[in-house]
Length: 184
Image 1 (tube, one colour):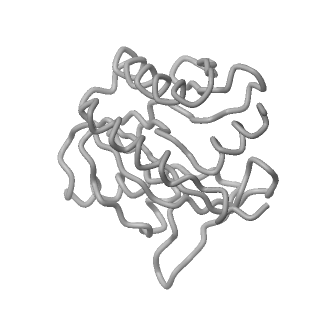
Image 2 (image 1 turned 45 degrees about the vertical axis):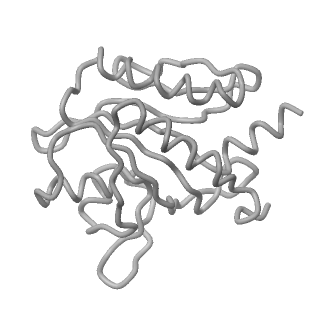
């Protein structure tokens, strides 16, 4: 499957506008971070992709973290968009690279706030197809499509060096478009 031809940029930009209207401040994010920042969220069995002495992001969450660690971003609720470069087995739903709108909340990292953010994201996905929430554990959730139960986004609370944040998938492409095609 040719990823370049399946990314619906309208959905991505529409989602950014939606999250901005829900009090997430947009941040223009770097696509590369320091290796140790990538390793904060990267599973240990996956590899990094390097450009000189930096690593291509696997998620905008890493870009946000680098800004926060370097004191270049105040605490708050933010949205951004980056490509994601992943060490994945490629199939119809998984690619080595894709585009994703990511949300982060560094100000209020309670379960109540996480649930509010999940509801905002669920409303965004429900514009495109019926979806539901799947609880993975006490602080980790997925949004899945209601028919095929395919994961469209992941949500949770993480901690690193006494710093906690909520991470949330706003929308990933071409995943959403490919799941919609499966419903036809």
